[in-house]
Length: 193
Ligand code: GRF
Image 1 (spheres, rainbow, N blue to C red):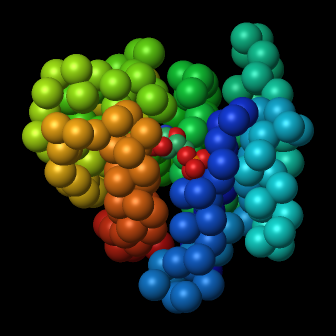
Image 2: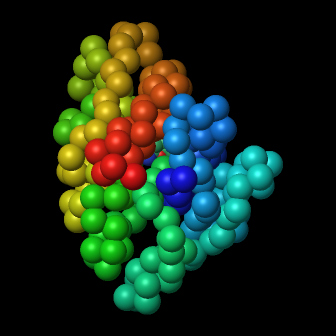
């Protein structure tokens, strides 16, 4: 069975983690979640992980090189790493240890509205300010540049002139929950796992 690690953010609700867990349970995603990793013990996603019966651990962010090593140790035995709300650059040793095996989800149709500082509600505000008629989400492979790895799956949504950033975020999030399991399954197939 393909083994996944899910990395959530400090404030993440863990809704993508939950969507992935449900897809594993339903069998539409042929994998299982070995571990959920959060940067702080207060991450809301950790409570949800426990409710879902998932194993979790914390790995506090630190600027030193040892951080990359500590993080890598959390992923031992995992086939794929799925970032869902992780906001830091992925340490180089980790990219080398899991080449083309780290996935991320971003709440826009990349390459638009990506890059440093473009995360969470900043993305949706920027889309509305640019008066786009379409937005969406992207699951992509992670490399050493923010949001620039190869795109695996994109799902568009309409943007309405009456939209608030919150309404748009909710519409995009629904699609994230479909896109992430789909992208993981695609990567499993590509790698022949
Ligand atoms: C999602 O909006 C995702 O696009 C971004 O972080 C958010 C995580 O949400 N990378 P959740 O914790 O999975 O609900």
